[in-house]
Length: 240
Image (cartoon, rainbow, N blue to C red; front, side, top):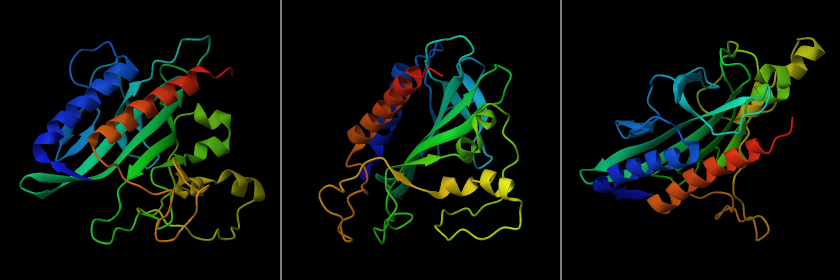
């Protein structure tokens, strides 16, 4: 997707408005900032912002989701980014965007990253998507989900080193004890779970039905709004 540079500022304003509508923070003013065509949530005093650590060990700022308060209920935060590239004096191209979910139980506990929803555009020259046949947009599950519920409420531990690019490869045999092999599930972060698919029609290699990019800013903004609303709906319905 390509848009005129003058449209970009309006798109940023729209994302800030979507966050205000869906997260309902008490603080007035814009809820996103831009730097080099990269849109993120700014750092700031709590509430409504909180510093969190991504599954890749990076620090970012997140907004608390408006989940109804319950006794001993978990708290959830959402971080986001959206990246574009300047391709000419008057045009920019969409690269990627991501929503990341974090959870904790106690106010002084560091939230743990457990889920992300991403939309990545294909390579501008080849038209090939990252992961080749991987779904776009797609979900990723953090390994803390498979490691057990307690890990979702513990401070994030130091992450194993891993490649920068996501690659699919065969699992290798380890000399670790069996119980440690079971718990070592960082590989799950490399699996793309499609957020839309058309498999009921037909899978054609030249037109993969689970890969697409936004057609325009309105479609991308609807994706932001619908995703956040769905997160709030699903997390609010939990009874555990």
